[in-house]
Image 1 (tube, helix red, strand yellow):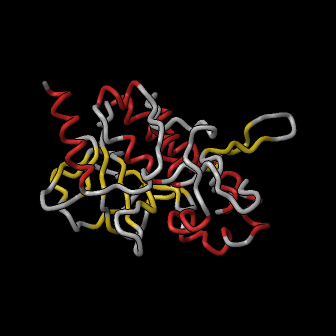
Image 2 (cartoon, rainbow, N blue to C red):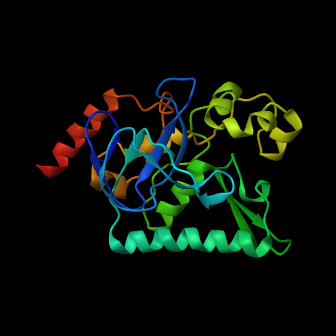
Length: 237
Protein backbone atom coordinates (compact mmCIF):
# COMPACT_ATOMS: atom_id res chain seq x y z
CA UNK A 1 0.00 0.00 0.00
CA UNK A 2 1.44 3.43 -0.87
CA UNK A 3 0.63 5.04 2.53
CA UNK A 4 -1.02 3.73 5.67
CA UNK A 5 -1.54 4.36 9.34
CA UNK A 6 -0.08 1.48 11.32
CA UNK A 7 -2.87 -0.49 12.98
CA UNK A 8 -2.84 -4.23 13.67
CA UNK A 9 -0.76 -5.77 10.90
CA UNK A 10 2.99 -5.80 10.36
CA UNK A 11 4.24 -4.29 7.10
CA UNK A 12 7.46 -4.46 5.12
CA UNK A 13 9.61 -1.33 5.02
CA UNK A 14 11.83 -0.25 2.13
CA UNK A 15 14.87 1.95 2.67
CA UNK A 16 13.83 5.62 2.51
CA UNK A 17 10.12 5.00 2.97
CA UNK A 18 8.50 8.09 4.48
CA UNK A 19 7.60 7.86 8.18
CA UNK A 20 5.23 10.13 10.06
CA UNK A 21 4.87 10.85 13.76
CA UNK A 22 1.66 12.05 15.39
CA UNK A 23 1.13 15.06 17.58
CA UNK A 24 1.10 14.16 21.28
CA UNK A 25 -1.96 16.36 21.80
CA UNK A 26 -4.02 16.27 18.58
CA UNK A 27 -5.26 12.91 17.33
CA UNK A 28 -3.98 11.84 13.89
CA UNK A 29 -2.27 15.18 13.24
CA UNK A 30 1.14 14.54 11.65
CA UNK A 31 3.73 16.71 13.39
CA UNK A 32 6.92 15.31 11.83
CA UNK A 33 8.17 13.31 8.84
CA UNK A 34 11.47 11.68 8.00
CA UNK A 35 12.91 8.73 6.10
CA UNK A 36 13.26 5.14 7.29
CA UNK A 37 17.02 4.46 7.17
CA UNK A 38 16.93 0.75 6.34
CA UNK A 39 14.89 -2.19 5.07
CA UNK A 40 12.70 -3.92 7.67
CA UNK A 41 11.04 -7.17 6.57
CA UNK A 42 8.33 -7.05 9.23
CA UNK A 43 7.61 -3.76 11.00
CA UNK A 44 4.89 -4.14 13.63
CA UNK A 45 2.66 -1.36 15.02
CA UNK A 46 4.30 0.05 18.13
CA UNK A 47 7.82 -0.70 16.90
CA UNK A 48 10.32 2.08 17.54
CA UNK A 49 12.61 3.25 14.74
CA UNK A 50 15.31 5.80 14.16
CA UNK A 51 14.60 8.32 11.39
CA UNK A 52 16.85 10.03 8.92
CA UNK A 53 15.40 13.54 9.17
CA UNK A 54 15.70 17.28 9.55
CA UNK A 55 15.11 17.73 13.26
CA UNK A 56 17.04 20.18 13.02
CA UNK A 57 19.91 19.38 12.66
CA UNK A 58 19.91 17.00 9.69
CA UNK A 59 20.73 13.66 11.25
CA UNK A 60 20.02 9.99 11.68
CA UNK A 61 18.53 9.74 15.14
CA UNK A 62 20.61 8.19 17.89
CA UNK A 63 17.52 7.00 19.75
CA UNK A 64 14.51 5.31 18.11
CA UNK A 65 11.03 6.76 18.43
CA UNK A 66 7.45 5.92 17.51
CA UNK A 67 6.28 5.68 13.89
CA UNK A 68 2.55 6.07 13.28
CA UNK A 69 2.22 6.34 9.48
CA UNK A 70 4.39 4.97 6.68
CA UNK A 71 4.30 5.89 2.99
CA UNK A 72 6.14 4.04 0.25
CA UNK A 73 6.61 4.49 -3.50
CA UNK A 74 8.86 2.25 -3.27
CA UNK A 75 12.05 3.67 -4.83
CA UNK A 76 14.12 1.81 -7.42
CA UNK A 77 17.83 1.12 -6.89
CA UNK A 78 18.72 4.29 -8.81
CA UNK A 79 16.20 6.35 -6.83
CA UNK A 80 17.51 4.94 -3.54
CA UNK A 81 21.05 5.85 -4.57
CA UNK A 82 19.97 9.40 -5.46
CA UNK A 83 18.28 9.88 -2.06
CA UNK A 84 21.34 8.53 -0.24
CA UNK A 85 23.65 10.91 -2.13
CA UNK A 86 21.29 13.81 -1.41
CA UNK A 87 21.49 13.16 2.34
CA UNK A 88 25.29 12.77 2.27
CA UNK A 89 25.73 15.94 0.21
CA UNK A 90 23.82 18.13 2.64
CA UNK A 91 25.30 16.53 5.76
CA UNK A 92 28.78 17.17 4.36
CA UNK A 93 27.79 20.72 3.36
CA UNK A 94 26.65 21.54 6.90
CA UNK A 95 29.70 19.89 8.46
CA UNK A 96 32.15 21.75 6.22
CA UNK A 97 30.55 25.08 7.20
CA UNK A 98 29.95 24.15 10.86
CA UNK A 99 26.37 25.21 10.14
CA UNK A 100 24.26 25.68 13.26
CA UNK A 101 20.78 24.22 13.64
CA UNK A 102 19.32 27.57 12.62
CA UNK A 103 21.41 27.65 9.43
CA UNK A 104 20.08 24.20 8.45
CA UNK A 105 16.42 24.92 9.10
CA UNK A 106 13.58 26.58 7.19
CA UNK A 107 9.80 26.71 7.42
CA UNK A 108 8.70 29.00 4.57
CA UNK A 109 9.60 28.00 1.98
CA UNK A 110 10.19 24.40 3.00
CA UNK A 111 13.34 24.29 0.85
CA UNK A 112 15.39 27.49 1.02
CA UNK A 113 18.76 28.04 -0.71
CA UNK A 114 21.13 30.48 0.99
CA UNK A 115 23.18 32.39 -1.57
CA UNK A 116 26.46 34.30 -1.54
CA UNK A 117 26.54 37.87 -2.89
CA UNK A 118 27.39 36.50 -6.37
CA UNK A 119 24.30 34.25 -6.35
CA UNK A 120 26.14 31.00 -5.64
CA UNK A 121 24.18 28.61 -3.39
CA UNK A 122 26.29 28.07 -0.27
CA UNK A 123 23.85 25.85 1.60
CA UNK A 124 20.21 24.75 1.51
CA UNK A 125 17.89 24.83 4.50
CA UNK A 126 14.92 22.51 4.97
CA UNK A 127 11.90 21.92 7.14
CA UNK A 128 11.28 18.27 8.01
CA UNK A 129 8.78 18.10 5.13
CA UNK A 130 11.11 20.01 2.82
CA UNK A 131 13.95 17.56 3.42
CA UNK A 132 11.76 14.61 2.39
CA UNK A 133 10.42 16.51 -0.62
CA UNK A 134 13.95 17.51 -1.65
CA UNK A 135 15.31 13.98 -1.25
CA UNK A 136 12.60 12.48 -3.44
CA UNK A 137 12.91 15.32 -5.93
CA UNK A 138 16.59 14.37 -6.29
CA UNK A 139 15.29 10.94 -7.32
CA UNK A 140 13.01 12.69 -9.87
CA UNK A 141 9.86 12.08 -7.85
CA UNK A 142 8.09 15.38 -7.19
CA UNK A 143 5.79 14.74 -4.23
CA UNK A 144 4.25 18.16 -3.55
CA UNK A 145 3.11 21.12 -5.63
CA UNK A 146 4.65 23.93 -3.55
CA UNK A 147 3.03 26.84 -5.39
CA UNK A 148 2.37 29.28 -2.54
CA UNK A 149 -0.68 30.58 -4.38
CA UNK A 150 -2.46 27.23 -4.05
CA UNK A 151 -1.20 25.88 -0.70
CA UNK A 152 -3.78 25.97 2.12
CA UNK A 153 -3.24 28.87 4.57
CA UNK A 154 -1.88 27.69 7.94
CA UNK A 155 -2.43 29.59 11.19
CA UNK A 156 0.01 29.99 14.06
CA UNK A 157 -1.52 27.37 16.36
CA UNK A 158 -1.36 24.74 13.61
CA UNK A 159 2.30 25.58 13.03
CA UNK A 160 3.05 25.15 16.74
CA UNK A 161 1.48 21.68 16.62
CA UNK A 162 3.48 20.78 13.52
CA UNK A 163 6.79 22.19 14.81
CA UNK A 164 6.64 21.82 18.62
CA UNK A 165 10.42 22.12 18.98
CA UNK A 166 10.16 25.61 17.47
CA UNK A 167 7.25 26.88 19.60
CA UNK A 168 9.17 29.63 21.39
CA UNK A 169 10.49 30.99 18.07
CA UNK A 170 7.11 30.74 16.38
CA UNK A 171 5.41 32.74 19.12
CA UNK A 172 8.01 35.51 18.81
CA UNK A 173 7.03 37.88 15.94
CA UNK A 174 10.64 38.97 15.31
CA UNK A 175 11.88 35.39 15.10
CA UNK A 176 8.92 34.40 12.91
CA UNK A 177 9.99 37.16 10.53
CA UNK A 178 13.41 35.51 10.22
CA UNK A 179 11.60 32.36 9.02
CA UNK A 180 9.64 34.39 6.42
CA UNK A 181 6.50 34.24 8.55
CA UNK A 182 5.70 37.92 8.57
CA UNK A 183 2.70 39.34 10.41
CA UNK A 184 0.17 37.21 12.24
CA UNK A 185 -0.57 34.72 9.45
CA UNK A 186 -1.94 32.54 8.10
CA UNK A 187 0.90 31.43 5.82
CA UNK A 188 1.31 28.98 2.86
CA UNK A 189 3.45 26.44 4.76
CA UNK A 190 4.01 22.84 3.60
CA UNK A 191 2.94 20.76 6.61
CA UNK A 192 4.34 17.28 7.35
CA UNK A 193 0.98 15.61 6.79
CA UNK A 194 0.91 16.81 3.18
CA UNK A 195 3.89 14.61 2.36
CA UNK A 196 2.12 11.47 3.56
CA UNK A 197 -1.11 12.42 1.80
CA UNK A 198 0.89 12.75 -1.42
CA UNK A 199 1.75 9.06 -1.03
CA UNK A 200 -1.90 8.04 -0.57
CA UNK A 201 -2.23 7.64 -4.36
CA UNK A 202 -1.58 5.10 -7.08
CA UNK A 203 2.13 4.39 -7.58
CA UNK A 204 2.14 5.67 -11.15
CA UNK A 205 0.35 8.87 -10.10
CA UNK A 206 2.89 9.52 -7.31
CA UNK A 207 5.73 9.32 -9.81
CA UNK A 208 3.97 11.33 -12.52
CA UNK A 209 2.16 14.22 -10.81
CA UNK A 210 3.00 16.42 -7.81
CA UNK A 211 0.22 16.39 -5.19
CA UNK A 212 -1.70 19.62 -4.52
CA UNK A 213 -2.56 19.74 -0.78
CA UNK A 214 -6.03 20.69 0.43
CA UNK A 215 -7.27 21.81 3.87
CA UNK A 216 -7.33 18.87 6.28
CA UNK A 217 -4.30 17.13 4.76
CA UNK A 218 -2.35 17.95 7.91
CA UNK A 219 -4.15 14.90 9.35
CA UNK A 220 -3.69 11.28 8.27
CA UNK A 221 -6.68 9.35 9.56
CA UNK A 222 -7.30 5.63 9.83
CA UNK A 223 -9.94 6.02 7.10
CA UNK A 224 -7.16 7.07 4.72
CA UNK A 225 -5.94 3.46 4.82
CA UNK A 226 -9.02 2.28 2.93
CA UNK A 227 -8.56 5.05 0.34
CA UNK A 228 -4.93 4.04 -0.22
CA UNK A 229 -5.87 0.35 -0.39
CA UNK A 230 -8.52 1.02 -3.03
CA UNK A 231 -6.06 3.01 -5.14
CA UNK A 232 -3.48 0.24 -4.82
CA UNK A 233 -6.03 -2.31 -6.05
CA UNK A 234 -6.65 -0.12 -9.10
CA UNK A 235 -2.92 -0.15 -9.78
CA UNK A 236 -2.74 -3.93 -9.63
CA UNK A 237 -5.71 -4.57 -11.93
